[in-house]
Length: 415
Image 1 (spheres, rainbow, N blue to C red):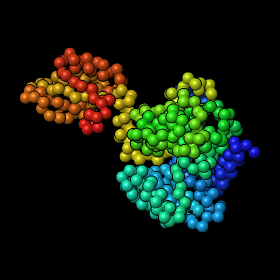
Image 2: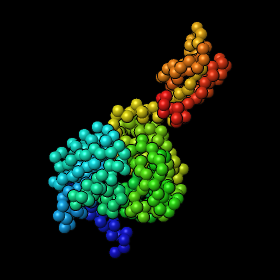
Image 3: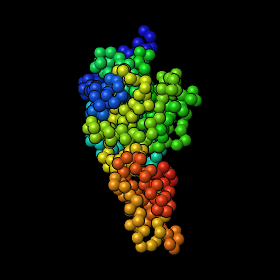
Image 4: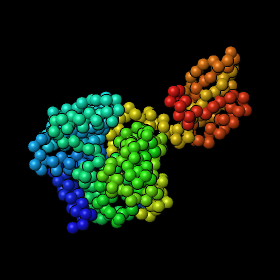
């Protein structure tokens, strides 16, 4: 039996065992996206699993393998700030074993509470460290000292095998392999599992957040490398270093098949899926759908599967998502205006606004001179081209301004 056949057999065995715990997730044809991109688009809804992500699959398979073996310890340990923690907690409850889950102190309370709900008395949550690296190091120290089993989120053969069950279900639900699969990438466990399962019978696109392109960096270097900086907005896929085992599976992919999705564009996709389809996706869960615009020319007329990998979205983040989406779409801008300190100046400025221009922010920052003041202004409008008209009117009226919408430093302090 070849390695590919052996993995295929083991992935199918893992998928069969999972049916004792939870049903398969739906594979749904999406009419809106299919018409927009002129192909046959299906969504593999991992956001509808019992923990609203695919992560419980790898946790199940890794724990199953340990418990089916000769292990004397039934203590399981993991470090996670989100979906992996919830998957491990759910499976600790199912298998009747005890788990210690380390989470950063900065983890949102909603995620901590959901993890506790899934695990109940079968888990203990320990909040350690401001940064994940500190949390991970402490979890590994504890696990080694107590002789427990450490459950890695992606860099583990049994975990990858469990994630491959997503591919098993796709094949069974479609009656075969699709033409193309768009895979979200964080640590690489899901993408490695599905690529290993389908092999060359399918073409792939791999998409990771622009602020965490660990796969792109690894493919370019020929080995996993650690990114110096990672944007944590897409928290389910913002990984500084792709897993060593997943990279062994992915190292020969064509670099042209790896795409970086801008975080603000992902926000546009999240809102579109929510408003048009009623589908709640977390940023990482929207990656595959977001990348459709990058591969539009390649997928026309084909059968395409997008894996919506997670739906653990905290709605307290919705204002931020809307804000970022508006800025990316060009319908919201921030600028600093030099306002004359004289009667009628404000009224004169207001007259430059068009019928669809709304003031979303107006804040005096300081008087930069006796006769002038700096004002932070946020404007929302109905179409990006409206700003060309507005700025022309400001120039004509003699109002000096500076567009700071894309200035990361000023935006961080002022917006």
